[in-house]
Length: 267
Image (cartoon, rainbow, N blue to C red; front, side, top):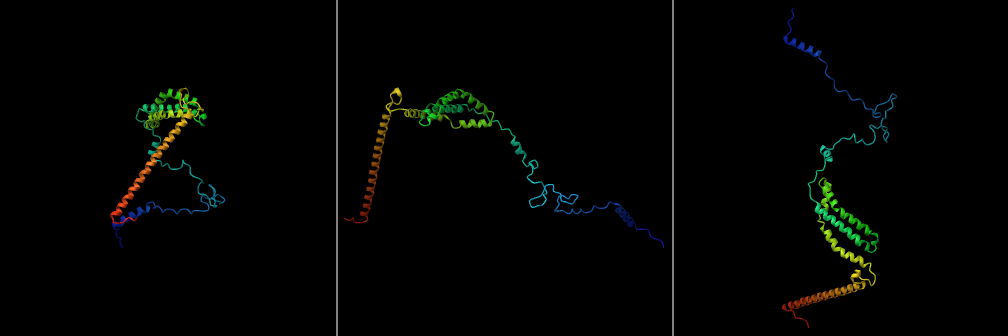
């Protein structure tokens, strides 16, 4: 019996099957992870003993990593680039400002303080012996001679350095002229007080100038105190009289109101 020819579609299927049989095999699924040996996380040696490269913990278990904190070199660098750049940024040069007048006033004030201290300090009672007046006066002279150079140096530095500019600004901010006025106003009192404590009975304040003696000053203070107490007594008497007058006026007004309301004053 004759065999029929194969269908053309079947021939194409046979070719596709043959091609599929010759293709490489598909990849297998991921292999199962190896079984973890909790008693030997780093493996075992030839004798089967657990490896302990980092030693053991206090509870007896094997350490999985080295003890202690990690080195800074191993830490992640998280500082932003802008912060690192700002760290090394050079401060901007300040705008030039003329601080010379204010710094000169400050220097004059400092010289005044040194001079007053040198002149009056050693004459003060108790602490005067601890104040080296002659050396302070000499230092004041050296300072005054070099003040222009010091002012110029700080002025020059303020034009090239922000910190120097802030320092110069602080020294000139308060108009240091008041220091000079303070020194001039306090100096007479300080000098007279220092000379007073050196006086002996019968000596005059001011020496040959013929000033008052200790007895004269004592009597003058007594007279001033008597005058002050008399003034206080007069003011106290006037205040008492005023209070009495006010009390009488209040009493009179109260009696007048009682008469108007029909009340009869008792005999």
